[in-house]
Amino acid sequence: MHLPLYGLLFAGLALCAWAGDWPADAAVDAHAPTRTLTPKVVVNSGRLAWEPYKRDLTPWPSLSHLDRRPTPPPQAAGFTPPLRGDVARGRAIALDPARGNCIACHVLPGEDWPGSLGHLLLGYRKRGHSDAYVYQQIYDRRLINPNTVMPPFGTFGLLTEQDIRDLTAYVQSLD
Image (cartoon, rainbow, N blue to C red; front, side, top):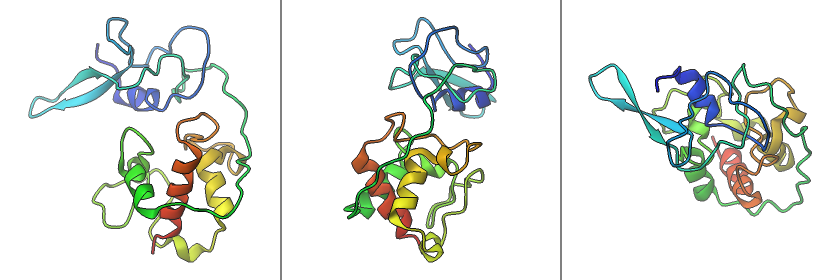
């Protein structure tokens, strides 16, 4: 099954329960253990191999432009101080493709990944945003920007409250 990489990447950012057919550009294989697939580059071949994704994403809508299934409305995070986030854990989440994967879209200091879709996070601390504001952006940025492509990590349960606190601490530490 060879589908556009664009559709696959956004199928991996699937978000909540629904009923209905998959969009045509979603990477789904009814014979795979988890049904959803992830690409693996076959070196020097010009091809992608498709492997089952670690989590079953089939019940969640994707960000595919063909996916018209409803998603939960934007939610306020309800952040309560103090932050109590761990910078090292936050960095690990930001770099982990199976968790936050922030580096896929954002440029992070000391990393060679060319993330170019999201805001530049270099020197983020100097912007002076409150912990509550940064926490909300990670939890569900749709309250701040309804047209965002950033996954609502909290609203859709993609990250725990502590994960978001750790990411907030990491982002707030960036010089």
